Image 1 (cartoon, helix red, strand yellow):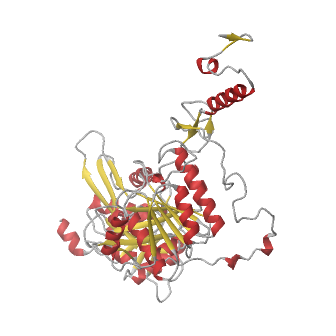
Image 2 (cartoon, one colour):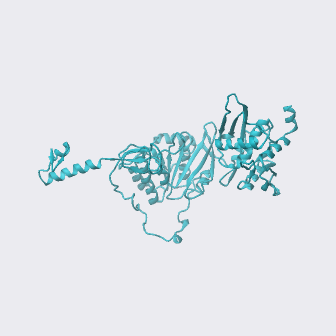
Image 3 (spheres, helix red, strand yellow):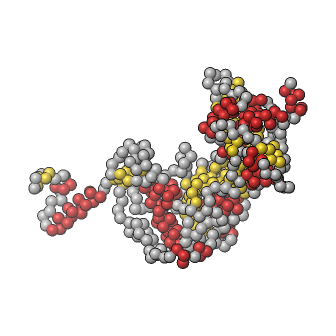
Length: 499
């Protein structure tokens, strides 16, 4: 059917206006048909596109655009403007009192260290980690500690039932009576209970299971995760409650969901650990209220997670002294020095191309040090398989472990054990020179506290005479000098065994 030169569809012909009421009904149907459309959002940066593209034009990620239905307008006024309870009037920065909202101590000293002193009221933190690493266990322990201190706490679980939470609490020990547990996935119902209880701390486990009515897609989609996190964040800012969102991770190890989720929150925490080891590491990749260099160390046991006040003793508890290919290095995690063991194994290559396998150290950094050691010293590594490992599953990201790795490789290749009372710390350049590292005094003091009598250091630091509580500084100028020191410091019985 044609009208005015335009062909009308079947739905439009069925609603031909015979009066003013029919014209109004037709406009309503056509308006609803126009609203039922979709947009494509990028799961990496959150940018929206009107149609699907193979590559996001904003961030350049491939195959990251996900279709999501375009919902209607918001009705609560918390997004796109000033949320309830917030003031849109400007205030001079000098008149704002920084101590108006003191930090909330979680009762977990390692977590407080990473957060910068505790939770900030009105903040939103995102806790991510691999399945089984202990995210829910840590969350329940924090909720229990806060509930025991008299603070109102709301624990929202979307993956488990309330009975399962009680079973975990029985395993952890004392069951806090003031902890409110809610098994719910709809954000609007959670916000209603939030208003009724008025908690100081809210935990959402997990954000990927939350959904809100204004979005038509399924729970866990890009739109649902983004909208749910925005609603919870706006509520936290309005009520002044600290919120922790537990998040899933992908197979690559990054947080699941859109990248805009990390921009919405104030703190991003990563819980790392190996199932073969008992300890867990907690790091902050984003922290608006403190440093991102601190690390928290926990041990997983039958009664939950226990803080580790002295990580160095934990990492060195199973060290085998007197074996070639092992060297101790004091690394610095924020303001905390830790002693870890770097191991190397040199074996004959059975294939044409020698293998290079690294665990705990970046592959590129290890390959660079192997080339420097082969070129700047008399240690032959050209046709040898090299295996590098950091004991305990620790990951070293700083260059202060370069000298220790070179010594461990040379020790394994020459079959000369490094003295058990010696440690090494220094950066190695392409010319083979040993360069200074930051906060060497803290590293040496930690080594001295654990009984190490000498530390191989860069030559500039070695010129300074050690104090009474520190161990001996052994200045090393280059890797060739380090190899020569290894040969001269080998015990006599080791040389006899080699003969």
